[in-house]
Length: 101
Image (cartoon, rainbow, N blue to C red; front, side, top):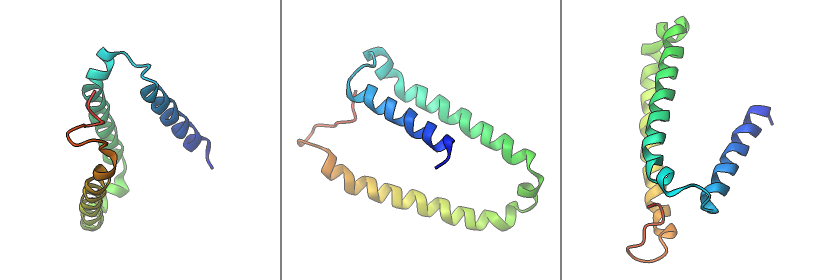
């Protein structure tokens, strides 16, 4: 197991513990969606720069684009399917949404 994976798992574990123990203030909790979106957009921007700098990727974009599209669509479909199935088990009472702050 690589050191990076260990770092990622540690960060996720710390975030999970802080969220579960309710150590995050209400103001930060309300802004988490905005913070998450900003970080996601920044990550996508950086990924775009990395792709643009790699000449091999640019040259083979059309040939790998078809396969990448199928993989992306399949991933989205199955993610939504699993979320739909799991939400039936996660919601404790009818009308109660566990993910609302």
